[in-house]
Image 1 (cartoon, rainbow, N blue to C red):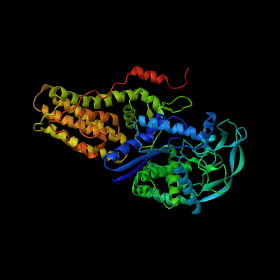
Image 2: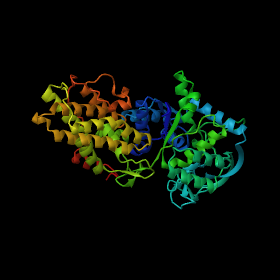
Image 3: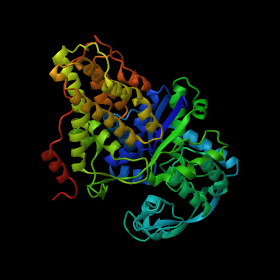
Image 4: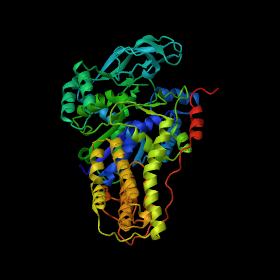
Length: 551
């Protein structure tokens, strides 16, 4: 395992609140992975930034009577607060409108231009006579020329994931009128020149998902098109060419460069050489499946275009979209649950546990279902893990005044459970390294279930032979569970650690130490109390009714 890592997630757009769909595929898996890497002694940093530029922000800020800078500052702060409440533990959260990112983007552009990868071309662009403006991508909707899906943006088909060369039957998304076409001059990046290098990088990178690689390779084979990297608006990173006015870089040109500029700012401020660290670390970019084209083609091609001055990603964990009650999430139809809203109902760990449980390492979509959430929290988190921890610690407090007894000789069953503890770190760790976070969590829950059965089988409440050994091993298993569960449900893991009254902080325990028998006889436990409260079906019915159109 590389002892250095930089982890990023697709940047949240500073134009509205974070909802469950945002955190499921990118931020939560990235956070869980970062915590795991740190437990393994990796110098890992999770950096992110708000994505501050683009026409939607320009228009929305006008509507609210704010400058774009004031508008994005509000959402940058709010997003960070919501993420923090959900225990997404960024090492640094910055913004694409930072002076450092603007300077970095302009510098990359100059290098690409000097290397001959940029050209200027007069193009015909959609213009809305009604709204009197050129229409950047998100303001033109129509049908995808590839898969014929309707109601798609002109810069990305959410149905097939491709970037359309020209949308069919275009309409202005502001007024729904068909736009006219007017001449303007834009700058283009020669993406089609990078097909061979991109293909080689995809072939050689063993960490990328095979199914994603396969269809990206097919895109390359079918022919890449050069990429229009400028837009005719005022809110964005200005194009650094003399005489060019009211022309900025397309958001997708600048926003993933913020992965690098944000990491450099953070590391350099810490007194670490950011560039050296970046190039010697494992680089992770966590994304949803809708932005594969950008992260597997645009992003690596730009880095190749500046001679890999900053290394290409090692991992691009790509996951599907979250649906809600089996329907597509839609803010406009009130078919979504804001993260802040959810955390007013239940602790962050309930949502973290549930979302990881249902989220495979694949591009399959996952579904948040209130009834399934209720079942999994009550039967698995509470009925299995919470139950075992409470039984083991509660019984020790009651029968032994909280003092861990001397274990006797191990019988065959005791030796078997000791082996379960000793193999837990490697069993779960192997799945974590492969990004199968759902399977890793399942393995932890199987461990808890196994110990519930062991406790039941030994019947320590009968005070027969082997009682002390059962208590000694069970309390040690609780300690193992706390360390293993920490990346997934950090607050609950801290609570378990406090109840165990162990020295140090839970986040400072090494991953492999979960497989030690780390609690000796004579150790005295803290107070034992239930970790979780049941989810009540009456509450769930109330939350279901809040979805959709209000009557």
